[in-house]
Length: 134
Image (cartoon, rainbow, N blue to C red; front, side):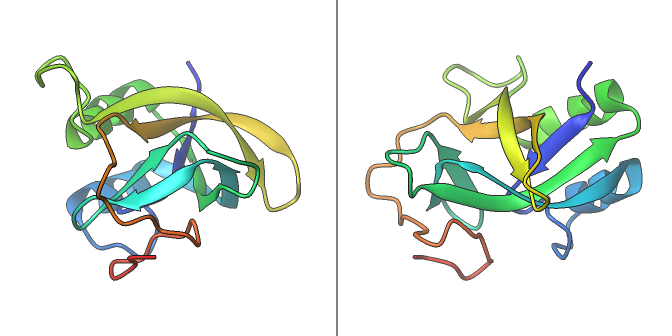
C-alpha cells in the first residue's frame, strides 16, 4: 500500500483540528509539494479538481504515513469518502503525481473534490489559507 499523502487544506501543518493533529502524529512531513489542479473554497475548507490548463497548480505538503491503512481509514471518514456516505461522495481518494520542492516527482494519495464547483470561489494562487477566496 502506498504510504504517501498529498494534502492541500485543513490537514496541512499549522491547522489546528483533530484530523490535522492525527496526521501529524501518524506521519512524517516530507515537505512542500505541488500538483496540477484547480483549488476552490467550498466552505471553511478547499476542494481540488482537475487542472484546466498548465498554469493550474495546487500547493500543499506530502506526508509519509507510518500505518497507512489505519490512518487512511480515519482520514477517508473525515473526507466523507467511505461507503458510509451516499454517492456521489464529496471527495474521492486517488493516486496522483506530485512534485517535491527538490523537483522530484513522486506518487501519493490525494483527496479530489467530487461535487460541482460552479459558483464556488476559485483560489487562484492554488494555496489554501483559512481566509483565502481568490
